[in-house]
Each structure stands twice: as C-alpha cells, then as structure tokens.
Length: 296
Image (cartoon, helix red, strand yellow):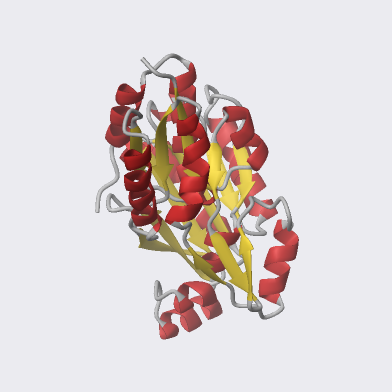
C-alpha cells in the first residue's frame, strides 16, 4: 500500500509553522486590497495588525479562491514522488474552492492514473477547518490508511462545532449576512450576532447577544452543552479572532478552567486574511469536536 500525504488550504487559519509540523502543504487563497492581489500565506508577509489596520483605515478587501492550476502545482510533486493524496478543502458552502480542487483532481488523475487522489469537502471554516485537518494528520500519524481516513473525515466533519460572534457588523452587512437596518441598530445597541456553520457548510446567524461579555459567555456555554464528553472533553480546542485579543484570552481561560482533560492548551490563532476580509476586525470564533453533528 502506497504512503500518502494530506494537504489543505490557507483558509484553515492555523499557522504555517503548525502545518509544517504536520507535514501538510497548503494551497493559497488570495485577497485583493487597494487594487493589489496578495496570496494568503498565513501572515508570513503581513501581520494581523497591519492587515486589519488597513481595513480600519478604510480599505475594503475582496478575495478569490485558489485556482486549479495552483492546486496542481501543490499536488504534482506529491504524486510524482509516489505518494497518494487526500486534499481537505475549505467549505463548499462558503467558496468555490471545492470546484477548483475537483478540477485539479481530474487533471492529476489523467497524469497519474496509478495514484489515489481524494478531495474531501471539509464543510468547515477558519480554525474549525484547521482543527479537522489537524485531527486527520494525527490519525494518519497513528497508522490510519488513506481509504479509512477519507471515510473518517467525511463521517466526522460535521462534529466540528463552530461558534462565532461579531462586533463589527459593517462587513457582515457588505456580505449580505445582516441587513443595513439590522447592522445600524445592532451597532448602536452593541448587539453581537452569534453564528455557527451549518451542515451545508454555510454561516448562519443563530441568535444575538447584548455586548461582548455576554457573547463570550454564549460561546463558552455552547461548548459546555455540545462538547464530546461534556466537561470531560479530551480533544483539542481552537479559538480564532480578528484583533480581539482580550476576549479571546478570556474565553481561553474560561475553557481551560472548565475542561481539565483538554488535549493541550486552547490554541489561539488570528483569523486569516481571506476570512478576515469578510468579517473585518471584531470577530471571535470557537471550535471543538461535539457529540452530535451540526444541523441546518
């Protein structure tokens, strides 16, 4: 049986160093700011403060998905070296990157017909996508074969729980996730929409919290209610945020105190340039494995 590699994309919002340790190459989505196109290199060439500072100064970035050609450039060295491949892609409910990956798979299948090339839709976003990739790499390192791993990811991807809240509604208004009047009223009253990613991999507003403190508490209570094993949860937990250091640190402290069996400390990551182009500054997100799968 041939050995295999796992790859993903930059929208997993975990550090390049983390992915390097996992042996997981990543394809780069793009963001366009002030008329210039940049590859999302997981903050290798720009800092979160610089990126969000440009947004605060009035920049309105847009994004583009990874192309089939870019993915082929990442896939081909793996296949040429004799490895099979599992590529875990950013949610098809949030991007067309899935179609790019499927197109790249077809190109590589013709060139390397003896190799297995699997494309798996993560139905996940930000560090929730990263959490799924990290778990897949852990299972591979533990000896799981490629077919079993593909099946495991497809069976368990909806157990990755995503909970977000936003304080800056201007960017969610621009993306059509909240209406203009709702954004204006919400900003005035300091209402924070609390969102998750549903079973179709789409971002959905579930409820509202009055102020940041209550929003942080809402995310924490969601984990208490949904984490696999309850307060005995023994998996990993990730937080991502866009310039919300204090809120992220508070949430981390609450979780580490309440969940003594966590696999390591809660990992905090900055929301990357692609997802951050749509959220802007002011978002906090929490990710963990739940007992139940996400619904609509």
